[in-house]
Amino acid sequence: MVTPENVERYIREGMPCEHVQVSGDGHHFEAIIVSARFESLNRVQRHQAVYRALGDRMREEIHALSMQTLTPEQWAISANAESRGG
Image 1 (cartoon, rainbow, N blue to C red):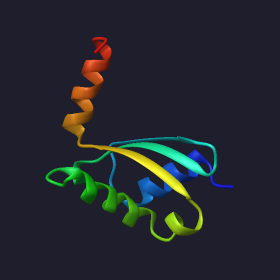
Image 2 (image 1 turned 45 degrees about the vertical axis):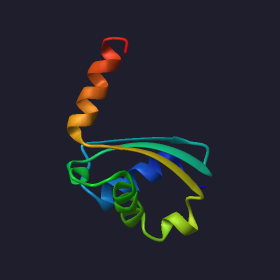
Image 3 (image 1 turned 135 degrees about the vertical axis):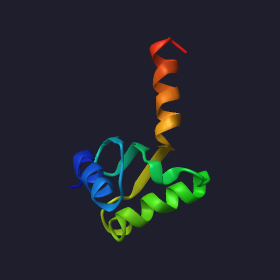
């Protein structure tokens, strides 16, 4: 069974990331992925980049993956908002 740690490793091996956090139950996963590669890409293009990084694993091992894809700047803004309670 695929673990969240496996999925995180697959993403990190497939693309440069500043931060990756994955949770899930072995079938359905949720990920937060922060990468400078996402600059100037729309949401669909960002997801496609992650799917390319995962390659055939997306069909064979990972059945469902929901993603939050952020640039480092967006991640910093998000972290600051959370630290202020917003």
